[in-house]
Image (cartoon, rainbow, N blue to C red; front, side, top):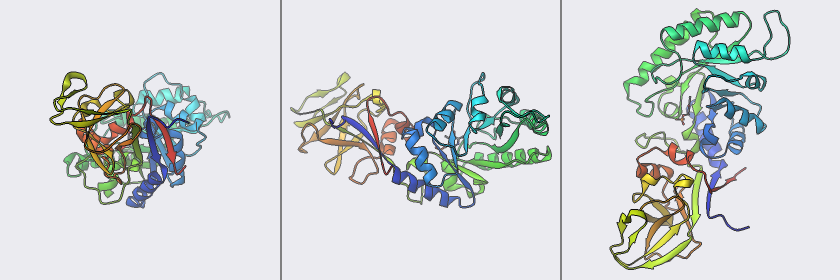
Amino acid sequence: MTAPQAEAIVDLDAYRANLATLAACAPSSALMAVVKADGYGHGLPQVARAAREAGATWLGVATPDEALALRATGDTGPVLCWLSAPGRDWGPLVEAGVEVTASSVAQLQEILATSPRRSAAGVPGGRRPRVQLKVDTGLARNGAFGDQWTELVGAAAAAQAAGHVEVSGVWSHFACADQPGHPANDAQEAVFSEAVDQLRDAGIDPGLRHLANSAAILSRPSAHLDLVRAGISSYGLPPDASMSIDVPLRPAMTLRARLAAVKRVPAGTSVSYGHTWTADRESTLGLVPIGYAEGVLRTASGRAAVGFAGGQVRQVGTICMDQFVVDLGEVPARPGDVVTLFGPGDDGEPTAEDWASAAGTIGYEVVTRLGGRIQRSHRGV
Ligand SMILES: *Cc1c(COP(=O)(O)O)cnc(C)c1O
């Protein structure tokens, strides 16, 4: 087989080790591995299986379709999904044993109306939906707050009393957990605790209470509660470049490509669209056959680097749809030589976080946008 022009290699041993490290950060809480967006670009089926092997009791996805895709891989364990536009048929989710999230009374009603369920009279033929309630504690995305939370609690209590639903959890999401000193964090925890009290007052056992994403797992033990939801950190990337992280996390993904061309150019040669970079000396240029159609962020143009021959060489000029140029200087190179865009850094290559800062974004965006013609493979399967 021809060696791939561009490949992403996912190290599942690193992923499992990261999950074990994160579980140890929250020893009294259950662990949810968040595998939305195709496992943050790392491959849903492989990552989901590895997460279960590493002891993740729960898997988390955003959309109902992702939950069904996860079931189609053969996964049968606890799964929660949390983001759906109206008009969904919840029957297949409930039948598949997926726990779903209600962020409003309307959403709870839609779940009840479209799920097969045992009636109050006990007519068999289906499972009761297991629903977790989402409270908006200050992110102002999904979830109910204030009067709407009170209404949602009331509707859930009535539906549970009628035997139509099982409330299995209550949860929320931080806005600023990657800034551990931000006052919103304490405020959100306080609102969450009040929301849980309201549930109890309405006679509902809150079930699983959860609030912590990666940043809170790493920095806020007070938010660990019954379960923690690990996304970016499980893939070995920091939630934010500024966060100091004192546990070992190893980037699971390495992205590399083989040089399609190498050429010697004289000083004064301008490179790529717009001629935004000009060689100030004679130099060797390498052509990397991967571009923004693969998710290489064009906004990193002229600021990124790639790993080569045990060090780093600069990316120069504008990143194109299918390709970009690196300035190899006097480093000997031949077409077919491998450059590493990012990886764990073992051979001096940049990390995904380095690409994120070059592009003015976060590591999450670097890994989740990969696609196009990249061939992905897994180690440690
Ligand atoms: C994506 C997501 C997470 C994971 O967040 P990380 O910062 O990647 O750990 C957790 N909870 C919810 C609700 C999410 O949407």
